[in-house]
Length: 332
Length: 239
Image (cartoon, rainbow over all chains, first blue to last red):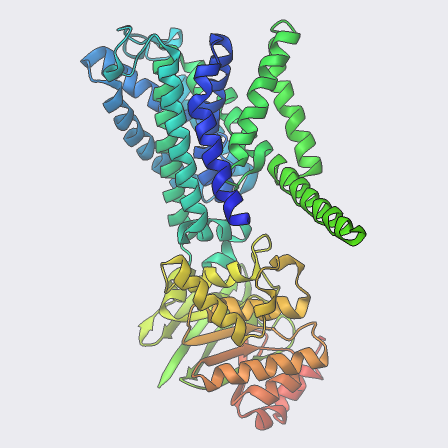
């Protein structure tokens, strides 16, 4: 029975997601779902190093920005399709992950978080100061071609919906593989106690670096998607610490180191953020307050994330159901 | 043939000589007890041999190659492993998953690692605990798990850092039997232990450290009656 449930749930959810745009004719609602999927994808990418590997990165905007800028510059300046630019961005982000990771992985806990935060900020300031080449603080427009799927553009938003849905599925598969493989066991061991892991032959530095590179490359792909979806990028938007914090908090609130936690976090937090913005009439900083508050609540009551609460509730429900079924039999 | 050899190894912390020119070896198949009063430097020796602390001076040789200064994972892969005095299970992981981390050293495939880990747990009489979270085990079981994890890497030499500490008499007998059976399987054992009963039971030879220096290297009965050893434990200015 558990077998059946574990297979049918994702398949059912997959079919529902495939059909969703047919029902969701309101373009605003569709855009909320696309954003929730984008953040699911980013959080799933972060999950490899931040969740399973336990390295609290607060600098993932660095990779996102690299992805967005690489594909956009290649497209606008050289006419290279963003589909290829996306791969180039992933490559560059991997290099950045090695450069940032090598010194930073010697740091633990909050120090690592601060170092990654600083790395992303340095990149943002660098881009802001390259006026002519990267557009400086004003940002860059992506050259408009309207309906050009080969150039990663379309006026129909459903085009983007299916692309990001495919990305999320890929990210889920990567995470599912990671959680079940030697790689994932080693990362989990490192998160629990890196010295005890080293004593069992686990080269912590090496596995953290592999996880960071994969995570960075995936995040950069999300950056390209964002650039093509919004068709405009600016340093503050794609390199800003706000984005880094969002990615991390979504994963932590949803359930770090779990498969579905990041998706759950994104589908809870993005609509909530939207609602908060509407209710307060767009007061600046309200989303950050929401994130801070939610993070505190989750840390206080269930640091492993909301997904764990749901699993516990489900187990409780099954036990209750089993008990009533037995009682029913007794009466009969 | 000597499997592990310390050649006038030294470790200084600032002006303190925690280990000062200590030399001894462990022969293949032998069980050696490493004893000494608190603060003698036993754990420092372990940390150096297992790659957690680089020595200030001297050399460490294992199975024909020099290992001092190598990293902990490298040394583990060569077949020299250690347990920690304060047990360090991967708390959030299940008992089986803990042992699987060790098994992955020789089995890349998950199912193969799982089977190997199950076999280790059977051997350690812990198969019934396989799915339990490691942090919920009792101290005695956690100590057993600590040994099971490193045995999963199929070591040539096992360094045990006070696996008896905090155990009851019965639990201790169980661990003693376990170590003896591992030795019968051909695992060489270097054992840091405060419990004299366990040391006398298990060791073929005893090395005594005091104030960072070796003061005795002999059979257990001889060492126990050595005046310098008695002085270190009973006389002296500490303990």
